Length: 108
Image 1 (cartoon, rainbow, N blue to C red):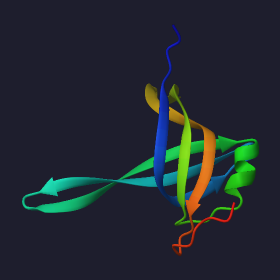
Image 2: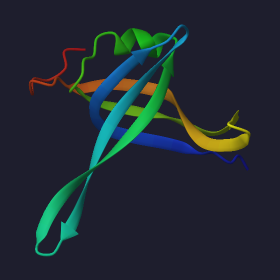
Image 3: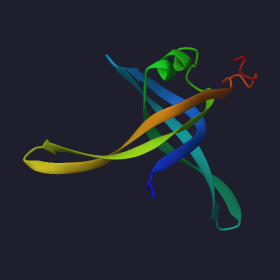
Image 4: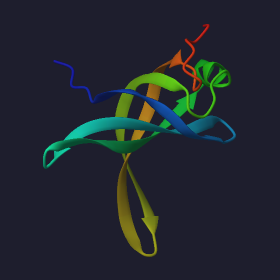
């Protein structure tokens, strides 16, 4: 049996940070939570890594666009200030623009 760790995010692009071989994007996914008698939106920011052809698709996107990203989760560690730090990398395998920031549907 194969074990997998994967993710699926639908949210809005907040920041696009292009590096040499990959591009990192921040995507805000909103979760509703109850606060007394009211419902409030609680955004969670996710940093995703895109490479290859997904970077070409991302080139057509802009901040504020609603996107769908799927991919795999990978644990990471690095040394900083004499101690080991741990984190999680979210590596995208799929990317689609669902709607533009202005509310219009995506044309691709």
